[in-house]
Image (cartoon, rainbow, N blue to C red; front, side, top):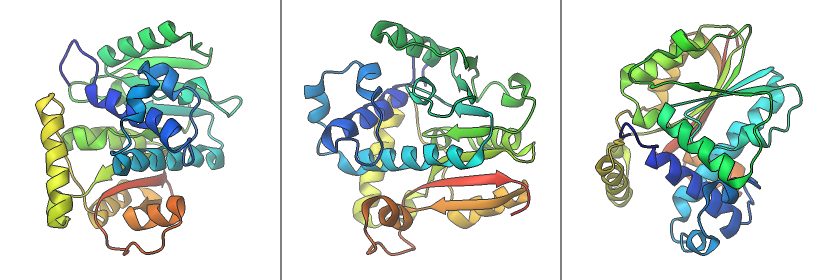
Length: 267
């Protein structure tokens, strides 16, 4: 992202979440604050109808991510790269405190949007400004016990070093849990899908937020296991299609976007 400005890809992800509320009536993921915090006229969001593939992927990854904390019972939830995410302001888990971590410029923008739309900040929400490429999360984040980390829409934009340093912080305490998404290399795609992915990568690069890091499922599984994650649930296109869209016809080895949930400690 460009320093002094909020993340434009964070705005884009928020727009997809908001458009899903209108175009699919929040069928996959319901967020009553998504349209409100974005501040974009509904007519503009309805015009996003052709962008369905990315929109429903973002809805599915958010649904998967927010379903997982209900099973964890952890008292702290850390949203890494929070952008305009609204979990903290509709938190359904009593007693769970939320820490939003993001670049200070993006956080300032978000707090302006919250104030402008009258969305109250709950007393159990705190903000931690971190530049993931210039600072170490471990130097800034202090917690007394295990936590759940939501880390969506961030990994592809990090350098490998930035990813590794952040993941080591998550892996540093037994019982920590994380949900994050990642992209497979365009080289694994069919020519049509590769062209579409490379076009999108070119667009975000032009606004100063290029995709830098890709993973293959075996590669990320080995890295997580090496850091002590014993439980890993990785959903690629096939499993996402079956779980959220009722489609059993997508081949298991179909490449694309993945979202996974991992827990530090024995399986």
